Length: 112
Length: 123
Image 1 (cartoon, chains in turn green, cyan):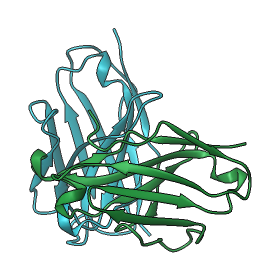
Image 2: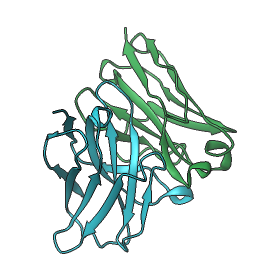
Image 3: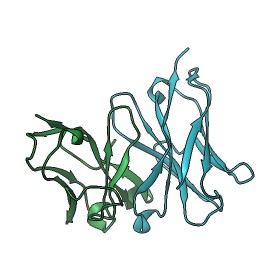
């Protein structure tokens, strides 16, 4: 049902850089809607990690960064740490669904 | 700092109506700054947006759930609610209430979330 596609999993050793892609379409990311990213630690509610494609809310480490181009967006984690092991979701809106909020399929980040 | 807390039955029978309430503290639900809404997550699966409501009562629903969903606001209690009718096992999920300071092209993300409440649909 998700209209934004993410890789199911990515992994990296501590200190490495990993990226998560979020692929959409001309009716959502490509239509100019901003992309937001959330981190969900096990058993907890999602937390806003990146707002408006590239902006980090207060308290979010600068190891996390976001970008957007065309119909896709990406989240990068540099200097991977053990506490970054979590599920990550992208989110946008979709004009073909009456402006509905849409989420990505989710990506599990594993720290090796 | 906004705080949101879900409440409601944790078990609902098939074909019945799921009802949840979200109590807001830290600001007035009548504030023009926020859109209030519900998101759910089936066990082991991803997030699904259910719908939003503005303080004026204007609602926005996921087209796939629209025929079964009602979101309402109670300004006297600083609460908003979710009703989902004719539930099946597929509606078993953790239900989150949440707030955001804009939608569509004005969206800046969903910045406040409740802790979530598990609702199981079973006889």
